[in-house]
Every structure is written in C-alpha cells, then in structure tokens.
Length: 481
Image 1: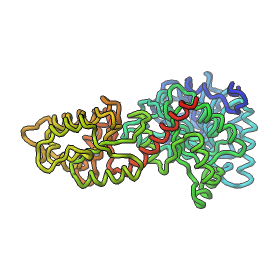
Image 2 (image 1 turned 180 degrees about the vertical axis):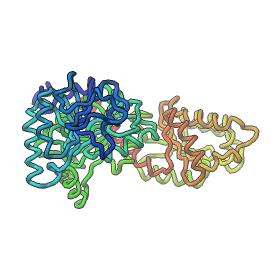
Image 3 (image 1 turned 45 degrees about the vertical axis):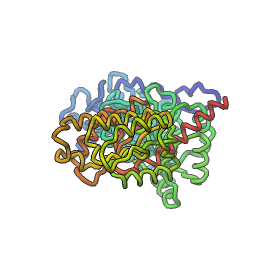
Image 4 (image 1 turned 90 degrees about the vertical axis):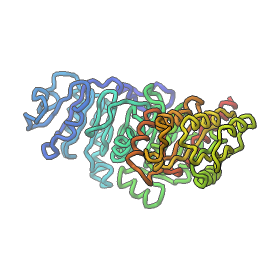
C-alpha cells in the first residue's frame, strides 16, 4: 500500500478508513457466544460477514453471510477482525492478502507481547506475510471504534460521533474511556487500540488523526515507541495543529517493566519523555480521568488561557479553599474592575454576603435572577478570564428552595450557561458528598449545554494551568513567526 506523500516522513497511508463499507469477523466463537461478531454487527451500516471453517448457523445472524473461508465471500471486504489461535493466524493473513482486504485487527495475543522467541518470530512472519498490502492493527489489540460508521468491538458503545480521537496501546483503557465518555458529555471521532503495533503503530495513527477532518482533539495513552521512530514522530508533531493530550504509561521502574510485558513496548527514560512532550507543546497528564477531563474542558470551551479568575461561592469557607488551590496552581483572583465592582455591590442585599472577589452569596444564592445578574457582571469584566463556582449538592433539594422562587432550577441552569455567552470558561463544582440523585440529574442538564460539572476542585484545577500553558506557547510561537 502507498506511503504518505509527506517528504521524508515514513508513515503508512490509512485514509481509506473513512470509507470502510464492509466487515468480516474471522473466527467467531460459540464459547464466547459470538461476542465480537454480534458487536461489530450491532450498529455497522454495511454488510457484516462471518468466517469459520465449521460453522453454518449463528443465532440471530443471517446464514447467507456465513462462509467457511474469506475467499468464498462474493463481495469486496474492507476490514477484517481476526480472533483465531496464533497457530492459524498466518494462513488467515495469507487469505486476507489474496482477498485484498485493506485493514485487519489481530485480536490474538502471544506474539511479541509474550516476550518469547517464538512469539517475536511469529510477529515478524505476520508482517512478512502481509507483504505491505494490508494494514494491521495489533496483534494483541482491539482495533478501531468508529461511531460514524457503526464500527465497535464491544456492545453498547455510544453511537453519536464527536470530534475527539483516541490512540491507545491498551484495549482495556479504550473500553473505560469509551463507556465513560457519554457521562462526561464528550464523543469520539475514532478510537484505535493498536496493541503491539507490529504494523500500524503510534506514529502512523497519530499522523492519521492529525490530518483527519473529523478529529479536532487527540488523546493518547502511550506505553512506549518503537526504536527508530523518534524522527518520524518529531516530524508528525512539527506538522500537527491540533491539541494533543498524552497519558504516558510506564513512568516508574515497575510500570516500565509492566509496559514491556503488556505490549512489548520500550518505555524509555521518563525525564526524556517529559522534555520531549514539552518541546512539542503536548499536554501531559497523570491519569485516565485527567486525560478525559482535559479533553472535556477543551471540547466545551476551546483552548483557553486563564490568568485571572472570579470565584463564586455559597460558602465563604469553601471560597477561601478555592482561592488557595487556584493560586497554588498559578492563577490569580484579582479585584474586579471598579465599574464592575460598583455594579456588583448593588446586587448584594443580604447580611453576610460579599460582592468582592471571591464572591460570597450565602443564602442569596436562592434568588435565581439575582445569581444570573451577578455571574453575568463578573464575566463581563475584561480583567476576568473565567469563573469557578461552588454549589453544594444538598442545596439542590426542593426543601431549600423558596416558595417564591419556583423557577430556581431553570434560572440556575441558565446562570451556569453564561460562560458560553461571554466565551469564558465557567466551571461549577457540585460536590458528591450528598444528594447523589439530584446531583446527577442537574449535572446531565448542564452537560447537555456543554457546561462541565466536577465533584472535586482537584479534578480540574491542575488541568487549567496545563491548558493555559499550552495556549500561551501557541500564542508565543505565533508572535515569533
């Protein structure tokens, strides 16, 4: 298959992925209740075939689409998901090459990931048999999740496509991310689980997503990179214009050993990786949750630069805690501009409240229209880049709401949506410590409006400076052009 047209850049061309029209699952297993076949057939918008040497009928599956070999399928096959024992894999690859399949996922493990000479030799022979005529995801990988086309390796994956791409060596990490994304209000364009990366590796997939028009943000879980691929990776990153967020596995000595066992990856010196990520302005995070939360913040509010923040609290003490955490993270909580401060002062009428930054509303929070006006004024200040709001979950109970304020919930949701009006991040904290049912209900309504809800300030405050630094470096590089 052709290489990329980029000068001196050794990456494989997989642009055909956006036009996959047919799928075959090779080796559907009765013991697994035809798990992978049923999953790929669940939402895919084109024909799905099954290949098994002895199976003629599969419950709930069209028997006319069951064949003993891939050669018997009368139509073109674009993508094959292979789940057969290692001893059968080479013949299957030979058959796929003859059938002119474009892409295969090799789910089978015990190749280089096994660490044995036999497994390493089998993986090399696998590539030799492919003859560079078909592209391989894996071995020891789950392949591609592509909601726009309905390609999914597990049941119940979200069907709504988004603009976030994800590359991971670990299939399990992909599963957690995909199943959890909907609750966060984010959706994926494509997810790749590439396992050992014998053929299509991290560099190839990163290049593809960096050029993919359906992808705006790129997430990566990376355990290591092949020897000899650093120069290609550098070129891909130099050309890239999209935010890249990386979770690096194998950072500790024990983790590095585990990474080699997991996907036969060379993890490398963590200090060198950190320097490398800084050099190419890649956002580096420490957990899967941070990976998804960072994507969520950028997806909802774009790449922002937060230097000066307003803090809005119902509890004066919690407001103090937020100020401490934000300033420790490198952000400022400055006084409002004098004209904005004068207008805010006129909106505060209950004893024990404060119109200064941090704003302390106390019981005045239950006057919904008043809250809207206060947030609107605070975000209108040109000195303020965004607003963090604390809203204890027990205040969501109807018993706390005034009979004279029946529109409290609707007004509150409109107030928390004001970040989009001012094009500034507004991030509410609704603690998980009480009233989980109401918290989840309100959070869903806010997420539908692209308002990111968090339960703990430490879930997102460390990420604000990461996004800010990313944006500052972009602005600095533009000034130097």
